[in-house]
Image (tube, rainbow over all chains, first blue to last red; front, side):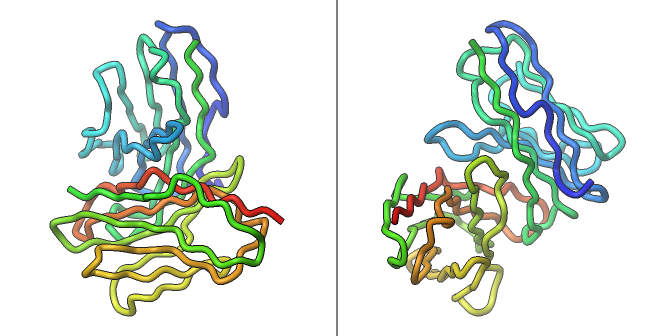
Length: 115
Length: 114
């Protein structure tokens, strides 16, 4: 596609439920990143994929968070047993390659609200 | 590991006034530096980046930033702002070699009023 696509754009869920957030990167981009944006906290790195593998999962805040990427394309971020502190905007980004000078292209994010 | 500090969470300014958004970073290795902008209800987009060479870099929409190694700063400037510059601005840092995480600051909200 023309840009990074994320779905849903908004998700409201009840505490304790599981949610899945989807990211469709730009075609041909091998690197994919998930970030979380909370009010006043800036962007917090969650996980990075190169192809289908995740060499850097260091940002995942707990074992309730997991992510996968299939076919070197679409990625799904899953949050199990959601808590109110999980409420945030979840951003996905992709780049052509994982190098330090590569420009990241961001999606518009998924606004997650846990009631 | 790298870290980024954006000292100002909000910067209010009048239209056509100059503006400077401050960014300081910490790193034990040399870094690449970036400014990203997030307009209301839009995704982040790259404004400009410093990789090497001239310490003054120019970006889109008339913005520029200057890398100062001795002060570990990468402040963003614009000589005359427009209403349409109202947005949140994020400074980010990344190590040059191989894969490295892009680390962001907490952002500065630029509020331009008439």
